[in-house]
Image (spheres, rainbow, N blue to C red):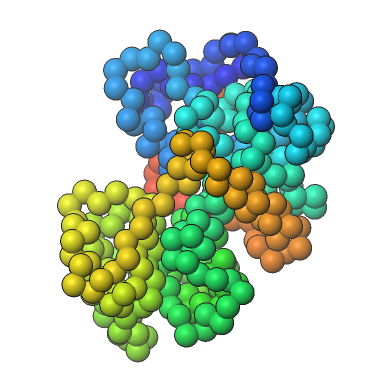
Length: 330
């Protein structure tokens, strides 16, 4: 089968090679890939490659396609079912013709929404769902109207779905964005938008907001660290998907702030029983996309599942100016 992998940390090292189609066992299913989307984790993984690899690294952590084979214990789905998923970081990703994936991590794809609008959503929705419901411990069915969340990088992949989920949960949503992205995330549910290129504290105070209950750090936290520590309420919660290189978590101690990392792959990486929650989140996502409750964040489509398309899509994401998601479909 055709497979696309990196042999070093340079984008141009992405190469096409042939490997045997794997056979599913246990709870695995084999999916014929029809579409993928590009995520920052793909780029970060490539950049961590040291030296020259003899066995290319296959990334890609959003996938969409049909189940063509399944293992003996994979009884949740049928051959021929169309599914979507975000995958398992410990295994080869979706930059290949066929992919093995545990049935607990997938869900049937939306029935009325296109491939391109579906495949962009799994990883970011799983990340945002775990952030809001598991890390911030927000009950979406409760009255959250007195709670405020600040989402830094609201127009990015995770931010664009976090804004929607927080809005649906009834929170007051403040998100950061600039330019044409401002109106876009307002339409997704942000109550107010502020500019991350300027003083966040002043802008929040101009909105008559002194502190917030929750902050999501969805971009480089270091440039905003003093603003984060100032704006978070005592006993509030800060959660992030990115590293702290220069800043210290200890700065949150005096406010007794809850600090949480979010890495969407943790459950599958450690083969935790809770990995089945990801299939549950995706099942709800499919229903919400079909009903229009959630809007897809696909903003760029590249057609042709091949080497050049994957490189072109990666360059767009790597430039760092995207709103929403870039997808590649066959």
